[in-house]
Amino acid sequence: MSSKNLMLIAKNSICLLIFPAFLFAQSGALWRVHDLYRTQPPIITPPQQYLPVKPPSDATVLFSQKQDIEKWQGMDGKPTKWITRDDYFECVKGSGYIKTKQSFGDVQLHVEWAAPTPAHGKSQGRGNSGVFLMGLYEVQVLDCYENTTYPDGQTAAIYGQNPPQVNACRPPGEWQSYDIVFHRPHFNSLGRLTSPARITVFHNGILVQDNVDLWGGTDWLKYRDYEAHADKLPLSLQDHGNPVRYRNIWLRELEENTPTTAPVVEAKIELSDADLQKYVGVYKKKEENDYRVELADHKLWLYTLSHRKYELIPQSRELFFARLTAIDIKFDLDNTGTPKGLSYTFTGDTEYAKRAE
Ligand code: MG
Image 1: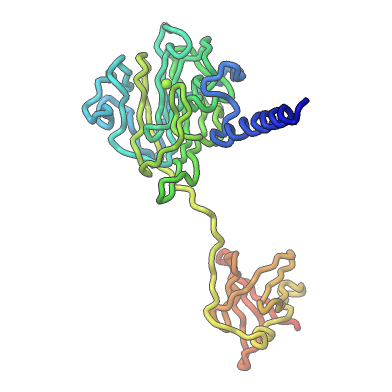
Image 2 (image 1 turned 90 degrees about the vertical axis):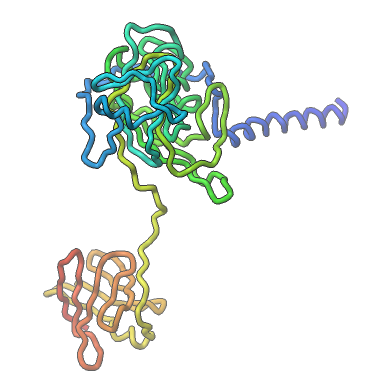
């Protein structure tokens, strides 16, 4: 074999190795969008639920009675043409998606829906609608009761991205529930993604999407990357041409996740090692050596009998705070500034320990 051929084989091998890695790095996906070779979620029978689930006191109710249709509008801002009954509304073919007048970011969302009965159509043509978080990220609504479709387009799929863990559908005509926890994506000032949207879904009480990262907006037939958008956007529901019904829609707006930071306790006075040395010793509650104070690395440390260790931050010559835990230590000083004992305060309870050495 010529050296030219060897080089060609080597080059092709590198391409074969790099190409899938590159593809997956871009999309995070191991499957192509709507891939029928993907494993079908196993079918399970969900337990009987007691619907409707009443909203908690802090919920924003988006639909519980006929008049609540006023909280929704067409995508053009005009009144929706969806049919409204007493406690539900129904999609009308060709009337278009509807969206809430209010905008939302991170939410806990409860939705009840029912597919048309008797069932008509097959695959994506049977009882198709969708719950679009922020109008961009679809949790699929579809009648997958005895109806097969591509797994990432199943009932409760994150459409085109992630199939549900199981198919927990009820028969068409029966009310079903989605309980969704949604965290919006975050973008920096340049519009670049800093954290993806995340979705958890319970379908009829069954966990089917477990804190799944989205790779972008959901779409039909294609991979769609993120595009920077507002922190809050309307919730929308899809008109896919099927008379799907919705009722009892409510949500709770969630506090956005903020990075956990250690509480900061700063020293109010500076004490030298010679000053701090005065506090070093053993402090006894009754007969036990309950507290030991040591000096190390120019810092004062409190050790408890339970072998816990706390850095003490001076607030005054008498009062010290533990840096990371809500423990206050007040030293009982004599007229030379030397501790005779200490008071240990935690959760409102104070114990006194007398200095033993
Ligand atoms: Mg849909």
